[in-house]
Structure formats: C-alpha cells, structure tokens
Length: 119
Ligand SMILES: Nc1nc2c(c(=O)[nH]1)N=C([C@H](O)[C@@H](O)CO)CN2
Figure 1 (cartoon, rainbow, N blue to C red):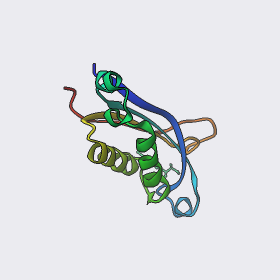
Figure 2 (spheres, rainbow, N blue to C red):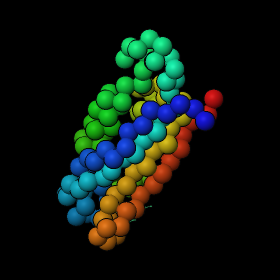
Figure 3 (cartoon, helix red, strand yellow):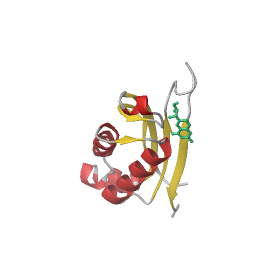
C-alpha cells in the first residue's frame, strides 16, 4: 500500500443534478480524496516543494466544483480525478463524491472512483 496524502470532508457548493431545478440551485457536495504520494521524500527534505501540497489540491478541487455545473456525480468525479492526476502528477487516487440529502434527509449518495495504478 502506498503512502497517502488525503483530503477528507471537503464541502463545496455547486449546481449538480439531472433535473432542471437542480441546475438553478446550488447545493453541497462533499469530497473525500486519497492520493498516493512519496511521504518519505517530503519528510527527508522537510520542504513543501517535495510534498503533494494538499492545500493546492484543495484549491484545484474548489475551482472545478464551484465554477462548473454537472448533471451526474460521476461526471464531477471523473473531472476532479483527471485534473488532480494531470496537474499534480498523482499516479493513483481514490475519490468519493457525496451528494448528501439528494434522495432524502440524512441519506448520503454518490460515487467512489479509483484511478491510476499502485506502484
Ligand atoms: N448514479 C447516479 N444516479 C443519480 C444521479 C447521479 O448523479 N448519479 N442524480 C440524480 C438526481 O440528480 C438526484 O440526485 C436528485 O433528484 C438521481 N440519480
């Protein structure tokens, strides 16, 4: 199992859904992301430049989610995963996109995707 840098419970507002009214209504989605990263390399230098900067990844995810609208959570998940892998050179990640309350109060629904290979 690789070392992991994670972001858990990232709550962002977006327009997402298959119904017309959902395209006019901003609502929360919650992202949980695990990314393979060489933690030992960053620890050896103690320099952020050698680390997978979770603040930078958070800013990237925030822009994608809040500046775009989608019908499906699958589409949002794929877009986020592809951009994180492309922009930060992440080789493996697992992303959960949760659309809380979409089918009823207190019920979580969404997707979990895993992309890339474990080295
Ligand atoms: N697999 C999915 N099923 C559903 C989605 C989705 O994004 N992926 N979306 C909806 C509706 O937008 C629902 O969230 C609100 O009525 C239904 N099923």
